[in-house]
Length: 144
Image (tube, rainbow, N blue to C red; front, side, top):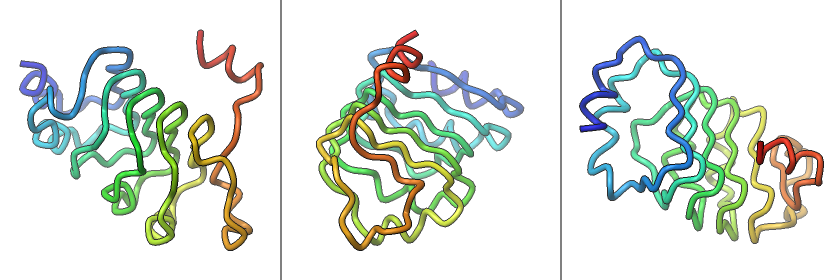
């Protein structure tokens, strides 16, 4: 039901379905609906149960905070229009070097509050990748 309803909103530019018990499996094939949303430029899927993403999601801003990701999905490196992505508070332990090569248009990759805490030495200059802890002021803002 959700898939078909969203897919018919072709001029939708912002979509927030955060803080729901939604997972990739529960949506079936959400990529079919997402692929029809050509005008969508901001997608908030934070606070759900995602472990993977459909290949056809391609947005300028993507919020995947507080899900169940163990790694950054490879499909994200093919999203040429992706500029900002947040995956805070997941279970990400590593980021493959070949994925980083696909993030040419990205200005911010937010990976704080994951088990991956430190940048390898060869990531020098990749300041758009944020690791470590979120400071208290930022945590208070994101929780509200």
